[in-house]
Length: 109
Image (cartoon, rainbow, N blue to C red; front, side, top):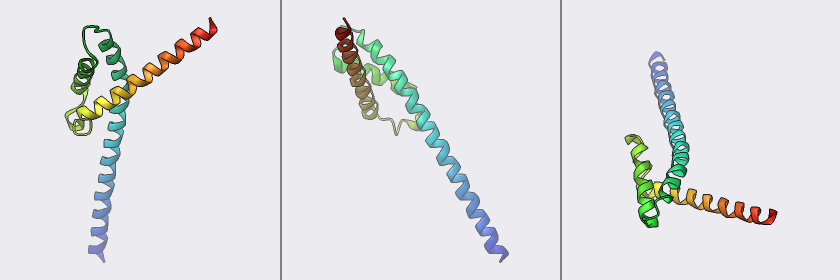
């Protein structure tokens, strides 16, 4: 009986440790993602001020800048394509907001 208790305690300890590691990784992922969203919006604004560049070149700038911020451990999750999709979604949201703001301003005038 003592052997079974020892094995169960060991298994429980391993499961608890793995659970803690999973929670830490998920927390880091959420923190990095929210930080990236904020940074991407700022980088989009900076890239948009570069009038000599095409849209693809501006996107490449944003992706490069963001890629440099991501810890190596998470670069597997945040590939260039994922960063590009995030940036495009944020750009589209910023554009919609701007268009809605202009419409509201025009109606109030």
